[in-house]
Length: 243
Image (cartoon, rainbow, N blue to C red; front, side, top):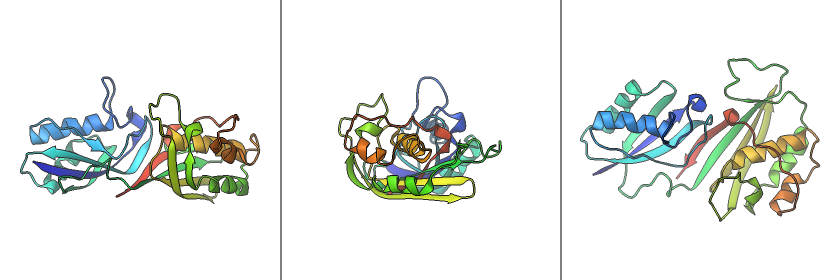
């Protein structure tokens, strides 16, 4: 039995998310459907993590077991010829039997994109959060630095998660602007349900002056203060998975 690793990217606009569900089109479901057609066997993909409906990935990793003798490169070519155009397999390769796309992850990098202009072009609207307000760049940058290191991110976990251990380590943060475009970068050893989107939603409220400076630190301490709303999914990208 072979263990094959896929590196892929996708536009999440038209999907219910990564995870296969009973109703709706998922990235996992689409790839498994095509793989079963190619390999003539049942396939179950293991991913580095789930992305929600509308969230994109520039670099997602998955693995699966197969009995087929078809080469990894031919599997990649066949997948790309049969999959919807908003899913593309960048690389396929045979890996060690003990490789696990989720459990072997060391860290993941997410990026979140915001557009501040008065009007957002329909050609980018699926990939940014339109925030037509002036933001205080220096205050947001200061708030982001509070995220570094080990913290309890319980306040940045959306309702619906069953995870009890909410401590995570953020090893790198970034915030840069180019004209009307703002880009947030967060690297951590793991992420809670909608954690990045809640962090970004809170940072925007601080940047607009709706929350006082120090709100991130206060939430990390577990203080009884309000957090920002969940930022919309279309601005979020799974950017890289590190093993």
